[in-house]
Image (cartoon, rainbow, N blue to C red; front, top):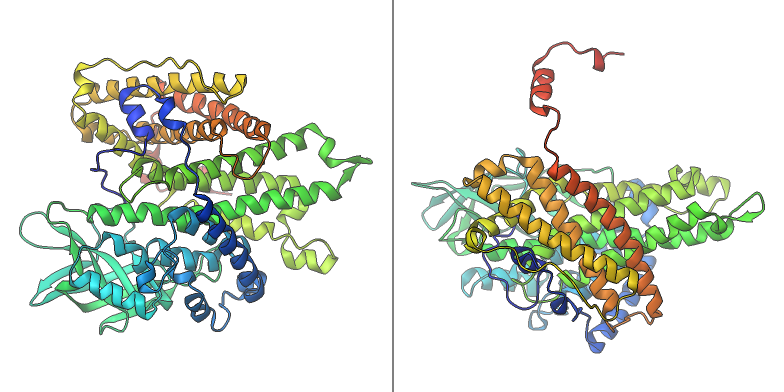
Amino acid sequence: MTAAPSHAETAPHSLLADLLKGHLDWNAWRDFPRPSRAEEELGDRLVAEAGEFFAQRVDPTELDDTRVLPDGLLDELQQRGYLRLVVPPELGGLGLAPYTAFRVIAQACAHSVPVGQIVAIQNGVGAAAMLPALPPGPLREFVSERIAAGTVSGFGDTDRSGQNNARPTLTATPVDGGYLLRGEKLFTGNGPVADLIAVSATVPGHGAPKVGAFFLDTGTPGFSVGSRVEFMGSRGLPNASLRFDDVLVPAGQALLDPDGDQLPPLVGLVALLGRIHFTGAPAMAIARNCLAWSREFIARRTIDGRPLGEYEEIQRTVTATLAEVYAMESAVRWSLAGGLADRWFERFVTKNLLVRGAWRTVDRTVSLHGGEGFETVASKVRRGAPPVPLERAFRDARGLRIAGNVDFQLDNQLGRMLLAQYYADARTATETAGRHSQTGAPGLSPANQDHLRALARLVHSVREIAVGLVRRYPDPEQLYAKERTVVLLGRIAGELFNAVAVLARAASDDAPTGDEPWQHQELADVHSVEARHRLTGLLARLKAETEPDHAKISRRWLAGSHDRLVRH
């Protein structure tokens, strides 16, 4: 699922507005979001309770080995409110704000990624999450009743043919009183244990087919759970293919957009939040765990009598991980502020920022631990070594990069959505780019002020590049066919957002953890240096005038029956 970005950005501020103008409006970034004191205290309490509960109730190593959830766990998750974190209190839920729910989910994932993802799917893309997207009427009443009664739910969006086709291959054929669903959904989180499922399906008919979301009880005749899906990571997460053999869904349990041929826009916007919960929260948990494991490992190791932490490359490894987590936190806090239709641009890109940050962090931590990083927990236990589950975190982190759609395809989608804004913006044909100089920035160190000026110039450059592309390719589809260009533009936009968010947080007066101001400034400096290196490389690729003929090489190889390179 992807959002349909038709919402005109208002407050709160979004980087999208800056990119369209070609000017970084630093003043609009200064009010960096933070929870109210009451919300922060509530979050602290719930996070502490979650840490205690999951540590007592779930053995993550056993779950990873057996892939079998502890008996009665789903019932306990329901009773304790973990399956209703975002549900309004009138329906028996906690009514948490998105960032607070993210914190609780991340804490659950810190103990066990698959168990935390059960909670994340329910609160991110399940029935509880979809409620704000449902208009008053029979469907909202149906879902509300199921939520109040207590339900486990999920959303099936991936067909056997893949997730990136224009329309689902699951069909919903109109019949008297409703729709008949025919087909299959694959990779459906919570699918094998759900009482209530929503799925995307194509409604065939005269003219352009429609795409809708259809909600049904899993006891409906014709519905069945197919094969269980087992991943390399997230072992124990209930996931399966779902079969629909002429499943009748009443008309009142269907949601279609009368004005388009994709999922209703609000469903897509809910999905953006949900993707942050079920991929971003586990990524954050893994990165934080890596920080703790790194400090413990460094504290107990010496090389030739010299403490490991005294070596320059180890110090650089530590600061890189610290800055990575700081940047991930900054992206989440900025993107989750506001209402459902706010900051869709940042919410879209935050998934990739978090899962890539976690991947870099866990890869770095495996290298730091050496052989212990590649060793299983069971092996460590046998020889009396600290049973740090780094091997499991490595597998879990890699899976997050493809969950909710593969990372490079999300870059592609983001690049298209950004370019669509330039195509739709009449200013691109008549106006010159806005100011790109960035002067005073109170609250930032001299080094970070330099980073901010560089980022302001990059915002200006991105607009110039995008406007140039739009003018060169009046037909959007011609430009979108240049996928590498679009992918690179999407990645650049994501890196820019995270870099600006980090500086905005460092410049703010919140200091939410009570850290000394220098820590904010220093971590922002470390992240900004690395982000600028990445941006320099991405821009160089985007501006490259010549490159190998990848199409010719790949087509020739794919068409051939013999190949020396694949023979031993």
